[in-house]
Length: 281
Image 1 (tube, helix red, strand yellow):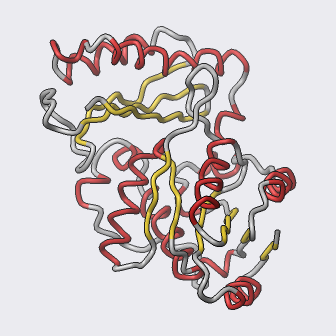
Image 2 (cartoon, rainbow, N blue to C red):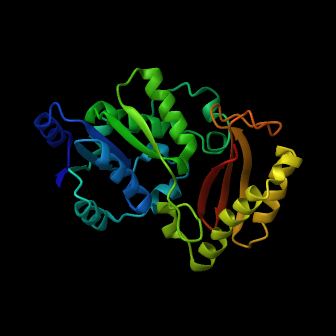
Image 3 (tube, helix red, strand yellow):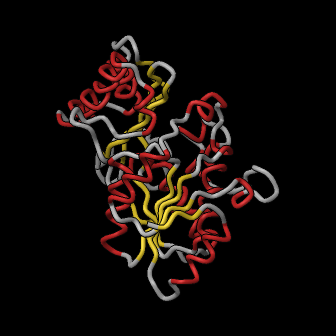
């Protein structure tokens, strides 16, 4: 595994493999099985796989989250080496932001008007800025993103189309822990009691979906019911429970089997914001 610590080293590495297909997995470190599933998917379908580890300052609307983001670089590199990743890119700030850490301006349309886009001002602009910069520098054929961050996945797919980029975005299913909780680097910051409470988010949603209660209800009533169920746990404060069109990400006003629909949730657990989503139909 080659470790690339600046743009010059990246360019040298890239020049060695002209004609090879390259898969790219962007990360901010604190790697877990969810990240590794993206890496493994890339390794199945491309000649070379490169992973970036970079904590991007422009996508943190809460400065505390940036300061507290876990740093596990040494163990991350060990795990990636065991997976036989071809290269890891650890860019400098000037590699990504030669003129300083400022986000691009994008037109995300309806994709960023609701949910995380509404509650985390500037987050998606920062995310799309760093991802498109990576695409420019690495020029990958494929890039792999998890469905856990479904809104992010939808936005970056649209940006690639708008910018006319050659990189193909490949979605990968959410990897979950034994109790169904979506794997996230943020989970490392949960206290034991908070982690126990957080595991109930998935149970509540899965149980409700399995009973198909939404067929005899409305999105508004269903959201209120689920938010109330989640809020029974002391550590959990609901930011939103939203039913949205899977393509436009606009909230729906009624349940229609002909409309692809997902349920999106954001819950505060202690100092940690947790998000998840599930398809309905």
